[in-house]
Length: 384
Image (cartoon, rainbow, N blue to C red; front, side, top):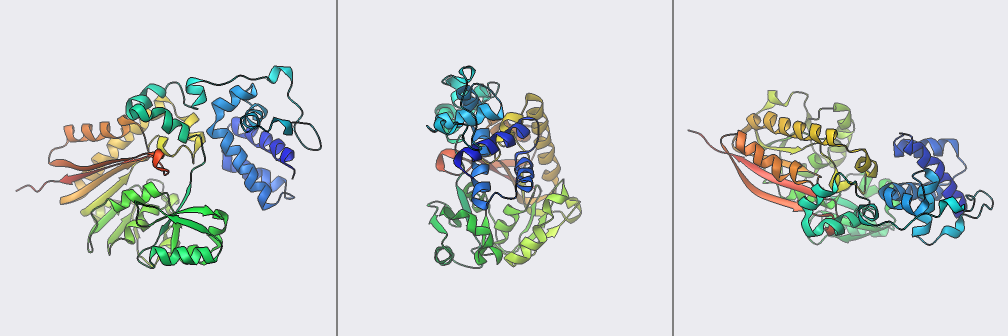
């Protein structure tokens, strides 16, 4: 496909996304209907679509409309490639006078929803504009090295021999940033044999901060696909349990655990196997710290949805607290930048719950290169 034809394809896909289709599904459907497109074309198309979704407000302003064509035109103008709209072959037609567009400013230039801007400014302070600007760009790719199987330097050399270029993260001992040939990872022996997993560096840093020791009984209460479950298993010999409100999210966890050489017990009712020495609650949230990976989530979030998420977060804390053994740890984590989902939730929990103290509290900023995350460790006091 020519560069112009890729822009036309992006317009088609984005119109489907703007009509309500999930981006990944729209891309998959386009690929099935256009089997002539090679892997390079599909990868380039995906990049165009996700860039347009991350920068939807600013590209719509530059392109003159919040349509597939408007977003792609805005992106082309931002990149200095408007000349690709020449109508030659399968390229989009040249812009009309009505598509002149305008230079974005304020929240539009930062691609920030207006209703969230005051909350994000309150939460981020002077970092508000830099963080929002960072979220307009593609997220880096990180690997978690299974240190229970192999040292980081050894797997880095193995990946280099396969043409995959990586750089060690300076603060997370298990993390490698992939700087070249990321698309080779999932077919590499290191990945297929469980020596590395795809996982953001901030997620790895959250697990590194947990007080894990051999012999502990540990529950990953909101396990999802099980990335943090496996990261915990690599840090200590644990009796490890995983639970998720939607068990289908854990459908691949058994296979991944076997690949990693660890055991994980999947449980529908974690109360039955309580108490636990540590419970990790990586709760459902706005996802504002990871909008680079899920830009549709930024635009889909509403006041009502945020209120429902806050209620769910509080309910999860209240459910898990009685399952923690005396002296044990309840770890609360979000990939949110919003104070009301982070420090606000912890303050509210402590106000309504006796016998708990707050210890380590950390924020991870997208300005560090990884996702935005929040972590607090709560300790259950011994009672005579």
